[in-house]
Image (cartoon, rainbow, N blue to C red; front, side, top):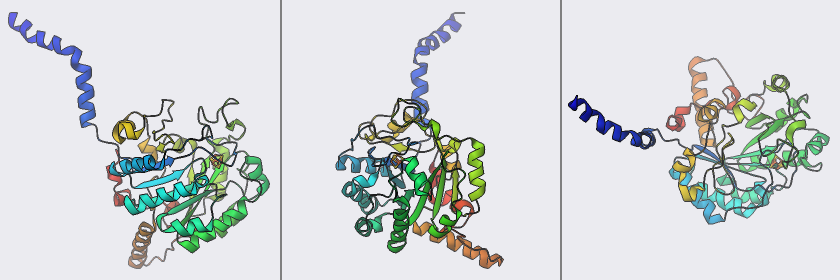
Length: 360
Ligand code: SF4
């Protein structure tokens, strides 16, 4: 009996320490999350007023250039291989943007640098100056009818002309041209096939319009998406009419909602589950900031978040396909109606090829 009590007593004393011990060990042995591909929304400011916008113009802050660069360096050290600059409209700050893309390629040597823009402020001189450091330029366009673009809030009637101009510049200066479209109540019945065949984007992402709490979900938020929403059946209708394009990459609400890792203008990771953003990665470091938010890494992989994201990888992919064609003598072609990479939906690179095994 005495022996038994002596044995139990230390255990009872250890009991209050169990939560601390669990947290400590859990942190220590939990595999690290690698922020392989990060979307840096360095500004919320925008010159357009899209009714469905989910990263709205709620302030005009941008981090000083040196802080932005320090954050990018931390991300690269934590394993980032691709940075996508987004907004707001990144080209409202062409000098700032140019310095960051140059830094990512020339100093950090990242595999891929991309930009998402509405296109309205892009100039040939900017492209000429920075094309060697930009792998992908993605332009948003939701309709090939200017009246529809105006109704959505995308510009004042010159959006499509500028889109074609940028596609030409991308071809001329060796940047992969990508197209992003948001499928909503205004365009789900539109037939865009002829324009896609002419534009030949490398990838064409078609997002189902998304409601994000606190950004566009009511008449109290800066934008109110409710009149733009479509049913899953309407979205599938649009997809069925366009999925013959090999560059077509559909992204439903389910895949999109939490699968993007977003660094905001204050250098914080955003959380789409309703929790607060992390603290600044300059103060917390990447690991700690990342562990305080939810990022759906399975969703990231499921939506094809890893793909051939620079010319070199595309060339590799084409070489692999070519040798497959030679070996099997099947005569399959690369690309199809888009300037695509081959493979289903243009995202056929094997995840292991670029280290996706490192994601947990
Ligand atoms: S162009 Fe993009 S950032 Fe600007 S309002 Fe439209 S969706 Fe929002």
